[in-house]
Length: 579
Ligand SMILES: Nc1ncnc2c1ncn2[C@@H]1O[C@H](COP(=O)(O)OP(=O)(O)OP(=O)(O)O)[C@@H](O)[C@H]1O
Image (cartoon, rainbow, N blue to C red; front, top):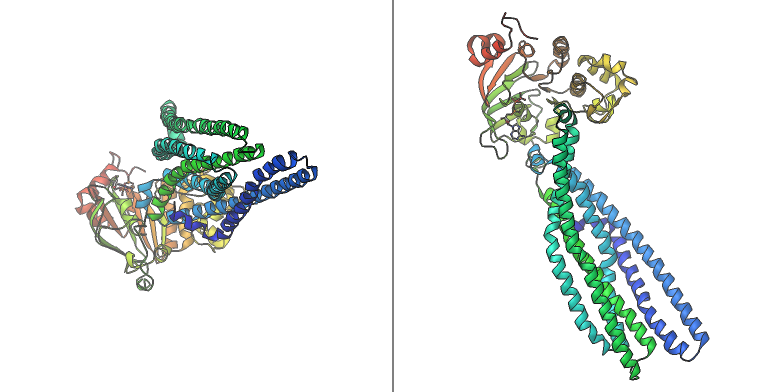
C-alpha cells in the first residue's frame, strides 16, 4: 500500500490542503462544547442574555466555518484520490501492455481486469477515507482527551477503562475478517472469468445446449462470492453494536459519576454536558480509526494484487539504449538457428532444433498437423515469446538485440484468429500504418480481396466495425486482418493460417495478388491446405515440434513421408485435391 502512495505525488498540494483544513475544522469543533458549557454555567446561571447571545453567535460562526472547511476537505480529498485512481489505472494498463504473452497468461485477463478496475477502486476509496480521517481521528482523539482532562481530570479516568476496551474489541473483530478480504477478491476474479467465458462463448454454449450447465457454474461462483461476503459481513456486523454498547455505557457512567459530583458541588452542569460531548468525540474518533482498521487491510489485499502486476517484470525487454544492433543490413531476412522453445511450465518443448532461412522475394510455407508447433514457430519471429535455446535472426540481427518496436515495425503479422477492434474499417487498417492515405487502404483491400464487400457496406472505408468485428463474417474478418498487414508494407509477412476461412477461389486469387504486392518481402505462410503451399519456394514440414523436412512441393512429394501423408490425406479417393 505504501509503495502505491508514491502515485499521490502529483496531488501533494491537495493532500497538504486536506491536512491543514482538517486541523482548522477540528480546532473549531473542539471549542464548541466549551462554549456551550460557558453558555450554561455563566450565561444561564447568571441570566446574562448578552453573554448568551454573544457566545451562541460565536458557536454558530464556528459551526458554519467548520462545515465549510469540511466541505473543502471532501472536495480536495476526492480530487486527489480520483486522480490517483486514474493515474494508477493508466500505469497498470501501460505496464500490462509491455508484458510478453507469457506474463499475460500467468495472471490471466480476467484477473487483470479485476485488478485494474475493482482493486484500484478499493485502494482509491480507502485513500479518500484515509485523507479525511487520518488527520481528523487522531486529532479529535488527542484534542478531545486534552479538553476532557482540562474540564475534569478525575472523570477522565473513565477513559482508562473505556478506550482499551473499545480498542481491544475492534482488534479482536477485525483480526478475524482480514483473511476473508483476500478470498473476496479471488472470488471476484472467478466471477469475472466465468462471465467473460460465458459471454465470449455464448454461441458455443447455446449450440451445445450448455446454458443450464453454464448457469450452474455461474451460480456456484456467485454463491461462493455471496457466502464469503456474508462471512465478512457477519464478523463485521458485531463491530458496530459492540462499539455502541461500550459508547453508551461510557456515557451512562459519565452521567452517573457526573451527577454525584454535581451533587457534591465538585462540578457544574455545563461542565458535565461539555465533558459528555468530548467523550463522544473521543469515542467517535476511535470508531473512525477502527473503520480505517477494517478498510486498510482490505485495500492492502488489493494493493498487493496491484503491486504483483506492477512488479512483474516483462520477460521480454528491449536491449539497453546504445546496445541495440543496426538491423538494416539484411532487410527481409529471417533465420532460425537451432531454435528450441518451451511454454512456461510445459514439460516438453513446443519446438526443438529448428533451423531454416527465409529470404526476401520468396515464400516459405510451414505445414504440419495440428499441435505440430506452427503457430509457436511464427510467434518467435516478432518475439512474442523468447526462445529457450538457439537464435532467431530478423533482418540479419538476433531479435534480442533489437528494440521490439523496431523489430515489429518490419513485420506484417496476420494472426490465426482475426482480431479487429471497434471503430471503422479505416481505423482498423491504419493499425498497420498510422499515416496511410485512403488510396493505400483501398489498394490493400483490393489485394486482400476485401474491396468489394467493404464498398458494399454503408460508409465504405468508414463503415462501422463492432466490438471484435462481430458484424463481419469469419472470412471478411480474415481479409481485413490481411489488408491491415498489407497497409504496413513490411519487409516480412507472416500469415498464420490466415487463409483457412476463405473459399478455394478467393484463397487462390488472394495468393496471386499477394505475390505481386509482396514483391521483395519475405512471406511466411502457415497453412493446413496443400493448395495454399504448393507454389511456395520452400516448405517446412513440422512434426511434433521438430522439422521433418524442408524443400519444394516436388522435392518433398518425392522424399518426405510425412508430407506425402499430408498430401494423401487431402486427396479424394480418385486422386483429386479436396478443395
Ligand atoms: N500458450 C500456450 N501455453 C502452453 N502450451 C501451448 C500454448 N500454445 C500452444 N501450446 C502447445 O504447444 C504445442 C504447439 O502448439 P501450436 O499452437 O504452435 O500448434 P499449431 O501447429 O499451430 O497447431 P494448429 O494447426 O492447431 O494451430 C501444442 O502442443 C500446444 O498444446
